[in-house]
Amino acid sequence: MMNQISYKIPDDDEAVSWAGDCPLTDWICMGTENGRVVMPVSQPANGLYDLACIVEGLGDVVNGVAFGERFAAVSTPSSISFIRASIDAPEKLGEIVATIPSGAFDVVSVGRERFLAPMGIYGLMLASLDDSGRVHAETLGHGEYTTNFYMARLVETRSTVTTVAVAGRHDGLIRLQLHEPGAPASVGISTFHDIDVVDVCPFQWPGARHAVVGLGINGELIVCDDLTHGKPVAVRIPHIAGRAYSLRRAGPHLVILTNESVHVFEDFRSAGPLLAARKLQNQDIRIRSFQNPPSEIYVAKESLLITERDGTVYVDDVDAILGAEASGKSATCSQAGQTDDPRNGWLNPIDFSEVPQGIENFARTTNTSLNCGPAVVA
Image (cartoon, rainbow, N blue to C red):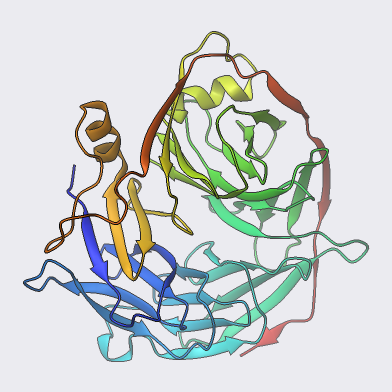
């Protein structure tokens, strides 16, 4: 397990708005509120890493970055930009090859140089790039009614079909399947009564290749052991209090951010299938609650929890945090040159063993297909 690592953002007025994996360095990269994407490159004497800029001048808050093999897509609330992102051509790294003036909530890679961006009630932007960087983009959506495509996560890419899970707010949990170019996309929408689905993440446990977990704004967990054929169930878990924002998988654990705490549902890989089958009886569920939460959480490299406070980005191994708390040691580490970690006191373990009885209902699922809007070539 690694020790905590800190990165200082040089500009005091700049904050991190996205973080995730960076295949260029096999480490992490970050998007900022000032429209930049940066990556750590070296560690000076004070223990804080220097940051190199991949791209800047995007003009808005970066809320998503997705890498293909030679290109990357960067989303903001006002545009989706495509940049060169190949270590084989470092002199062109970060060069913007095209920008589509359509804002998105996020962007994900769905195979090679193919990207998907959810645009809320305006549908989904599906874009592909050829070797020269020419972009072909089309909008997927319903002609007869509006669906809110909010946050998207890749579940699986196979030779003929790509499966994506989408949080659809009050429209529920959405299954999207992309086929060969030119073929219509298929979609299944599972809705629950009075649940606002704000995030979703894929999860794998034995025998479940397409398992996903959704998060309701009031802390509901929506669990499905097979997004392609299963029936999701919504479960209320005690002690996940407050307004929920984000859901992340960190190894076998599930990390949940609310406006009151960061909750770590330990070993969800074992509890998930029991919740999906409504068989979690007399089980001892352990959730750790981290008080004084950051504004957002991110996970990279499968198990690294990334948070930002006052211009400093913290990278912690989730298992190291849990192990330190279990052994009675401090779960937070002071950065070099400081006597007090600004996050001291955020850890407050919560244990409960009562069986959660709040299963809301099974979802009502509708299967249909998406229409393609006019293509955009940039």
